[in-house]
Length: 284
Image 1: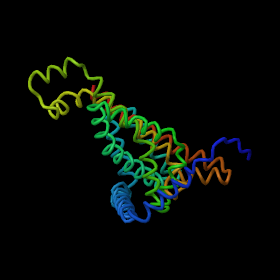
Image 2: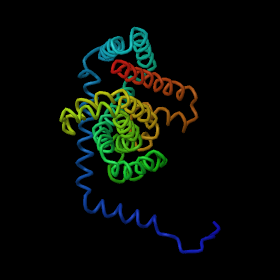
Image 3: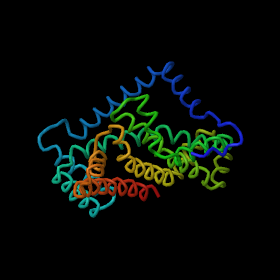
Image 4: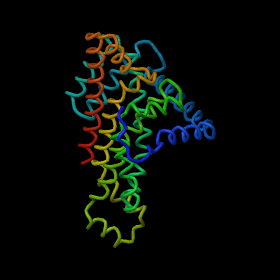
């Protein structure tokens, strides 16, 4: 490799390694606690999705999701959910579907719990927006594979590094659109709330957040889609689910297996997308 540098190379890689060693030496118990909590939540949510492993639990979950789809997005979505989930079960991917759903739902919930408050904070403080926006840009533009390296180092192989890397990659839309939605609330409405003596908290809870909810839900929708796009990458860190089937198909050049697993991912992506879109329409 040609070296055309005029000045000595900045040892950025060494600094990052030193920072990693510092974290492992000083706060590894904190990472272990996070890993244990996420693993427990994953097991609990996986048990809920399997309806306690009772007989015919896949069909019970199909019916539940079909009913939800009917009330949220209409009978067409309910029918699509029923047929799509039946096809996934028929192809033999039901257990992996539950693993994928668990990973996605946990990641999205964490992204919402962290992202929405940050978005609200950004909407209230221009300085916070100025500082956090470049961080969000970094989170979205950094190749997703890179997140797996520290995630595996700190959390070992399994579902946890998959969840952590998915949260980092998928959280920015929730933060951005929460901030954007609140900032786009009509200034006259905000001024009217101020005129009635509303506190900042009252103004947020009774005016800005309710009006900005459709935009926030759109951010959550994008977060869900990005989480599903991370499923295959997370499988490289040992995360179970449909992503591992896709990765296996790629590594073994099995077109049929890849198509089946990919189709299952598309079906669940469409169901989750329509569910959140349906809620967004109701919120308008």
